[in-house]
Image (cartoon, helix red, strand yellow):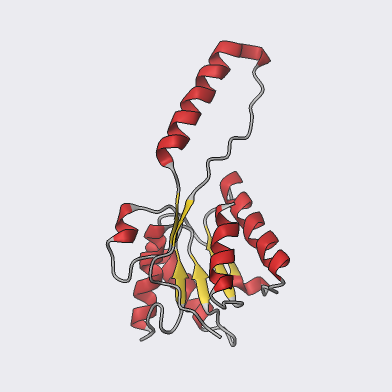
Length: 173
């Protein structure tokens, strides 16, 4: 749901050329890719395959390089979604080295809602995950697994995040 919320937010501000740098392929990443693609489909956004690229979580260097590649495309994105707030820093630095400004030249979005994202300038648009609730529910689920033993059946638990609009997404068109 977090990716769907982020895509809807940037769409509401006029963005249609939205790129997504995602982390390594894990179950969480697959859910984020699915959320991204489904929301784009529902909104009628055609995303070129070169706009969805695999990066690495918490890797500013990798995100910086991928940002350079995305911006070198013949039709570069107007907005880049990063795998997490730390990776955004690498993208931001790469854009500055290219003499591009966030959000004047390209908009950017993080994920996680790390405290750092709200004290940098411009303040990052991101999705804050409720890590406390995630930890509590994980501990409850682990206790249930121990109590139930062999009869334990895992369940999917969804902890909603909160969109933090920030200052890194420019209204266009």
